[in-house]
Image (cartoon, rainbow, N blue to C red; front, side):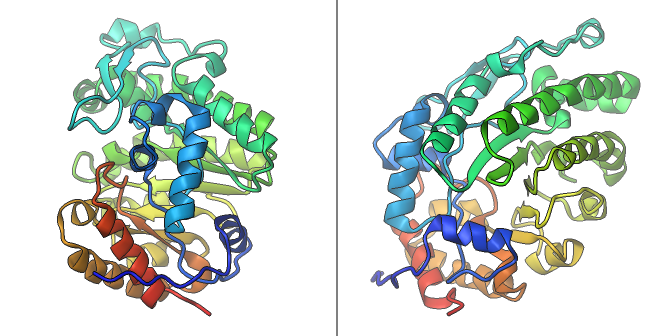
Length: 360
């Protein structure tokens, strides 16, 4: 398809600052969730996306510059927790691996759970030093908005014990599951403090990830309410009391029955909430009326459809999202952009935004 993109009137930082102040940007921003894609597009390996702060900044500059994306440099992984608590992960390699995977869990028995201790200094374990190095580099270079990342205590527990084992404990050993999450809240609080020690609070956009295992495809809303919400609320409250103004949360997968409980959390002023394609943007907007809603083109469409089909699907998402108001919508895939997405399909999304996503 022919590409003819309008020239932007704002850069990505100006759009972030507009949205953070409840203002309307020039056009709909596109946040790609494209950490792995950015690395490959810039000629790096997927391993670089998780291990090399300098190269991540370079890759982000190239992709955001070439495509007009809203993305900020970020290093983090959905499997965070296993490595940091003494297990092992495998970095992606080969044609089909797209992200780090856990190959050894540190919490394998009830005794392990009972003896669990958070490291004295979380800034020195696993992927955390690389994450913090990325934050330092951005602050040193004067970035006006810097993203930090942590993983929810629930997901840290699931990663460290293995998803299948964790789900069994939640159902059959709830006291053990509660005790593990309780011990892991300080892990995230320490990591929040570490980011705030590097990034001025007015610049920090904190991404609190780790929600795929809370989807209603895996757990009931009652379990979500009991095992996720109270611990996550403590984390959000700590961050807000420390002066953090904005929290970004990706609410992954089928979460419709959980939305009333998600709405109990404090995401800031405004918060930034992204959703999988399973949640309608109008529904999300009704539960979070003061926050920026991010959504939610199904990643599989980007991966396997033609540019023309991607363009039409993007138009549908744009029409729904723009009804929320220009100060409340960011276009994103419903989860991470597949690292090997066809370039023509990325341009199809940007063409749809150029044709149908301007506010001026």
